[in-house]
Image 1 (spheres, rainbow, N blue to C red):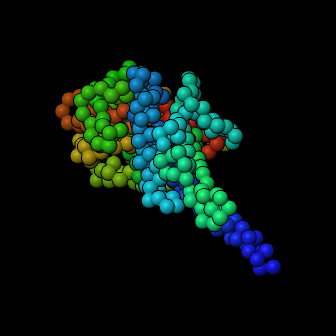
Image 2 (tube, helix red, strand yellow):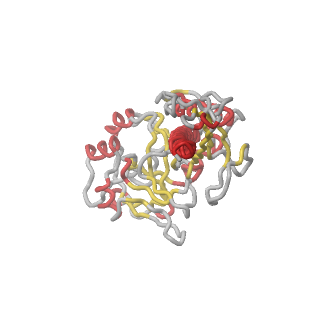
Image 3 (tube, one colour):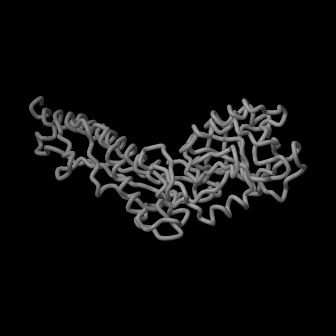
Length: 373
């Protein structure tokens, strides 16, 4: 009986051990694929992708994004080991960039999408195969039955989701500035492009030149006698220059926003999709002392508010702004003394803390806010 059952026992051992090996290896490959897809999709936060969304691309951006996605996905995928290997190589042919319909739970990646769809997702497949760079997975007991190895794959998709429905203060990125929405959008439409930044190249530096992303002046903008777009947050406590400098350097705090609007989160649409407007107090005067703090922010992405100038109430120290939207931009250059004062900014993609996503979200303008998920 022992002789008869030995093959059965060995077969059960082979099944138990080798199936466990396959499942563990599959988990290793899935971690590698997940990480690689997320890294690849981070290319969708680049200025090259923003130029596509703004319609200012010169035709080279898709190639630039694809290259960046491949480099990042391969680099991060290689950091993950799998059974018998210290690294896991991701083949370039297994990295695809395209469009994924986020409103459907069964959608698949569409390579090379056309307008109005655009690149929003990266799919990565990681393989352990005999003809691949990682080799197949060797088995322990199965060779007794002539099966030396097996092939395993794992796949993951990461996408840029722009369906933002709320902004809270956990990120510390909101500055106490507001600019008229109509003027801001007109300036962007004019296409003034006198600055360029090296953000995509990993250098947080800006300088003269053109990068295909237009600029607008954030501050000062004449909103009425004595007011130029600086907000007093919260209005319950007059903010000194020191207070405003603190808000520029570290962002408007959660406590300050709660004191101002009764909540720690901006939400510009209600559950029925109707607009929500916040009324916020301006502070008179132009603070030249803010320049040093703003110079430190050059190259950083910050949040700022837009108001509807037709709804401005009062004037001078009592001016009240109707706040209708929140946008993000990269600080480029600041001049707050002498003539022709300015804070030049350009639209930028924000993916930091404080964004709340929901499948009912309308999508942020030009997708300048969103998360890789």
